[in-house]
Length: 261
Image (cartoon, rainbow, N blue to C red; front, side, top):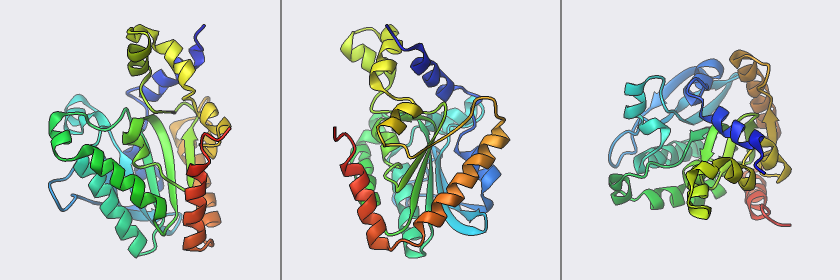
């Protein structure tokens, strides 16, 4: 019997009207300046990155963004980053490390862009580089799963000291439809796959992958944004006094312990 609640969460995470990274940047980050390009190929519009102030504290913000209309979504590959998007993100992270700015990443994508051109430009290597570099980065990192967090494409911005999930967000190694197609040869089994994947915010919190769930139901987008901002500020106050070495060790330990029974 499928857990309908799990698939309902998937549908809520995919809702076209759901606020994504650009919304939270606009409502939480003061004086945001967007920075472009990976210095190797081009700028990827599926990743919005730049610098600004969170409650007066300088931060680097990197967000997956799908766009608000069909033309913009085509331009942004519906929020699915290409290799240059991940390389841009890593460039901004290394810059943040140099200037001792905390990093905030907003996750909201079904996964990395899977076109042949992305593979030709090293999609897998770009993701792997981010995973490796983020693990030892000497500055606080907080990841916010704001919508659908899919596969390695989401993980490439999620190696963080703290992972926050919105109540109706999901985070999974594969989409329910993809899982159902592999296991049952039928994408219509997606509700059953959703339950089996344990991809809801509550599931991830129970597994100690997510550190905090931000309530959504019954709240306006502005209230959600305010609560998220308060949580981010609180976590940064907790993380900043810790030495770079201890913080990186704690991040490494957090991920090494995932999946231990």
